[in-house]
Amino acid sequence: MDVKGLIDISFVDWDGKISSVLFLPRCNFRCPFCHNVNLVLTPEKLETIPFEYIEDQLKKQKGWTDGVCITGGEPTLHNSLPELCSRIKKMGFMVKLDTNGTNPTLLKELLDMKLVDYVAMDIKAPLTIEKYSKATGINTENLLENVKESIRLLMESGIDYEFRTTVVPSIHSLEDIKQISHSLKGCRKYVLQKFDVSIGKTVLDPEFMTKSLSEEEMQKFLATAQEEIPNTKRR
Image (cartoon, rainbow, N blue to C red; front, top):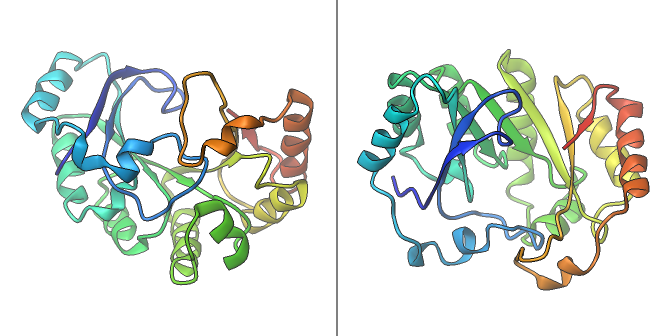
């Protein structure tokens, strides 16, 4: 397993938990607003972090760190992900998985084997081929049913999870958020994230760094989602 990035201590990647974060390379989406450009486009140019080093760091943080967040890229592209989760669990840490939901087979394996304690799944757009393709930068005709299956798996799993949408002004409308929320009605947790255009940030398509939502606009998106899912939060 090639780990290409490590954050020793994070207070923001897992609500209510102190976590370490592992970044895995490669993604099957090309979301134009993605901030992890090098992980997606040129992961071979990034240094691989030996797992022995990661183990040493985690051992030092035992009793302080609650768990490990595995993110990407898209972690479920790696068939060895269950092994990675198992090694982390055996060290006594909880595991959180960030995923785009395109590999429900591996997700089900992780759930069945109880190798993850929390799953955060990105919902990029309303669940139509046209909308999802626009948000992900690829033709999602062969992947959208996988996304829907992953949603079903999580909602029926009993595990702690969240669905989350990064709201991008040039991609999402209030109607889009309404459609997404309707599709997720009854879910345990839904989170809206405001697209970050901070100075120094980069994304796959630089044109997306030119516009951000105002706080007033973001509140309208939140209120729209809460009409279908009252416990929707923003992050």
